[in-house]
Length: 343
Ligand code: AQP
Image 1 (cartoon, rainbow, N blue to C red):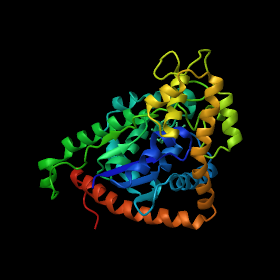
Image 2: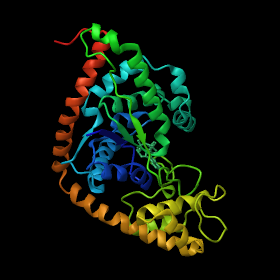
Image 3: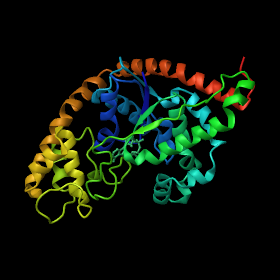
Image 4: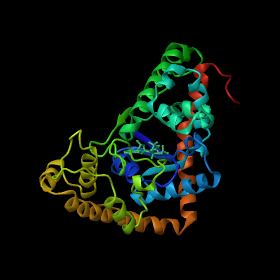
């Protein structure tokens, strides 16, 4: 079976963007592939954070994975910082990643601009190297992510190729290794619809956990009244009739795409159903569809979090399985670079 890995940062409440762009796809993959899904807590400290919030978010993100349908019998679920190989491999990869590659990352430019120079640690720049470690450690084939992560995934592929070229093949064999490549070069897997869910208050900005206004996103745990209110107040335009793919109407395209995915309808069905609707007619349809899609997830979340030991057990089990794979790759990387083996 091919291997799939992915994760979400515990930087706040999981929103519809994280779910539609990533977690929902994972659920459909766990029957077909060997899957590892982790909570990427080391990534959550690249901007200033509250320690207590990190603890709480890590637990709630794990519970949300389960509530959304990730099955611990099929997938390994674990916390990134519990597998030390992630941090160790990051150092090795940092040393083969040119700074120029990192300077080109759009997310770094955006986040560092927003945070202001004083608050930007070097971890924000090297974040994509940690992400490369997350992926390459598991020799995975596919990485399901939202559109916003495409550039980071390309970088992970470039780092893998550079490392393989520098240290793989005959050189590695000479040091007692297997020869050939050290890391598999993975492919991105981006969902066909709602790969980039946009903010409710600005159809040109992505929905994000860290956006200051909670009105800009629908959180997975928002209650029906909150969802109703957020959709009621979301940004619209003055055109009647709903349509996909009109660049002049980003909000319209965004909300239609969300509606399409939460109702499991095709794009054609939704385009036909909504083409003559006004915003006033469309919003209640969308509100009901989102509320009923989220309801079973919220019920399950409440059940899961009622028993904290349950999650701890799942995370410990996932960690063991992850470590088995990660430690082999890490040992290979050390060996290929010429480090003296640990006894
Ligand atoms: N708006 C989005 N639409 C579709 N997919 C999205 N993802 C995030 N936002 C959207 C996908 O969710 C997964 C986890 O994302 P992350 O937590 O690692 O970080 P992020 O992409 O930076 O997400 P946020 O919500 O914007 O977090 P903050 O505000 O903390 O930076 C990824 O697969 C991502 O593609």
